[in-house]
Image 1: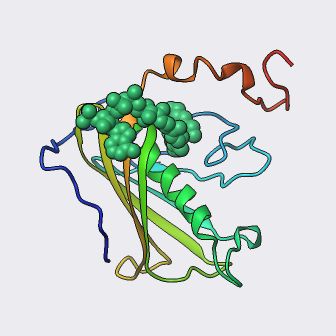
Image 2: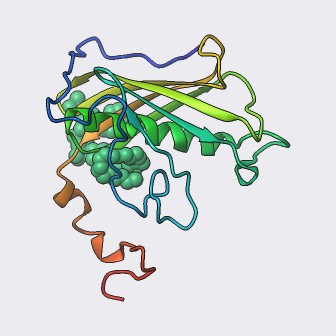
Length: 179
Ligand SMILES: CCCCCCCC/C=C\CCCCCCCC(=O)SCCNC(=O)CCNC(=O)[C@H](O)C(C)(C)COP(=O)(O)OP(=O)(O)OC[C@H]1O[C@@H](n2cnc3c(N)ncnc32)[C@H](O)[C@@H]1OP(=O)(O)O
């Protein structure tokens, strides 16, 4: 599939943390109200990301009617959110919390409503706090990809990164902190 994404020349291999989620198991939600993966989010994709061997992950997503962009097909921005979730969860195999720095999507074919998109993702390597990832989407035949993505995720200190925003956080009860 065509892409203009270029990996840096100084990229280094990364290795799975021994305590990472075992292959075949769901990588734990980062929080239940997340639009991408949260089970309590009022609207969201509810994607379960499954740990694979090594630095790989997989996931699937049924394309519901509310995900429509063009007539009968998925909205491209929604697909990019799914890729963000799949690739953004993969650094948890390194036991590293991250946020998205840069996301690129290559759209190869329209994806019909009612289909199930299957994602495979992998960590390609890292440079300092930067983790480079890639993912591919297909509709059942891995030889026929419908889209692919590259994501650059940046390791963060969780407490510091969200310190100024936690008072706005929405909880499953529907309440915000301090509300
Ligand atoms: C949705 C919530 C997610 C919560 C996560 C909780 C943890 C759970 C863990 C895991 C599960 C996650 C599953 C989630 C999936 C979805 C993730 C999202 O959608 S995240 C939301 C969107 N993203 C942001 O809101 C970031 C906003 N940006 C920032 O906060 C900063 O810009 C940040 C932290 C990314 C970098 O800022 P600095 O000050 O800490 O560090 P500097 O020095 O600027 O960057 C570090 C290195 O990265 C490069 N870099 C940064 N941004 C880049 C870019 N856009 N392109 C290329 N390089 C970039 C820089 O050049 C630098 O590289 P050199 O080491 O010097 O080589």
